[in-house]
Length: 163
Image (cartoon, rainbow, N blue to C red; front, top):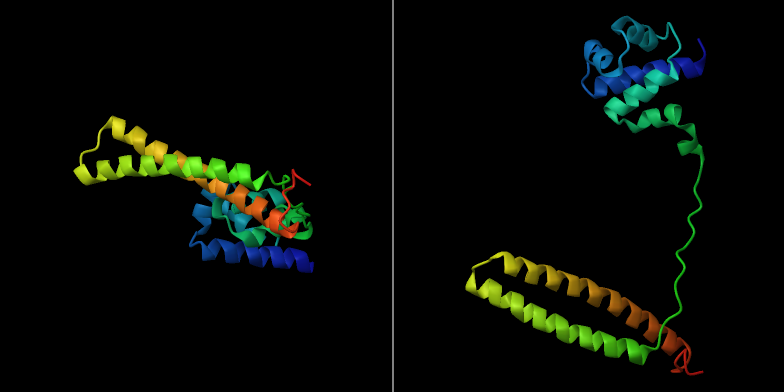
């Protein structure tokens, strides 16, 4: 018997037993007969790729991936870094950030009054959602300001738009 067939036979048995499946359960889940699975596990017949794929779908055991999708094991995907847009004018971004912070403070006071009185209705849900939206807006603006300020410092205090 070839080493790969022997390894596959041992692997399918190990996977099945590690998932606490008996032959009947494995047969029901994969659509193969118990006698066929038994032959595969004993190395009396080569393990079909379809059975490996079905066993993987049923168990999710990562050890089967090398047989089901060999390209996953041997292929390395080159990840390209995300393109960073050029920074904006730090002064203009900070004015936007200050305006957004004032809006956030108003929304936070509004939500605090909801928490303070303890009664929540449908209108309050909208106010909570608005606060969460403002939090997201602030996070986005803060990241833009940080990027612009770092660029400004790197350029010796010169704004990228006023060279």
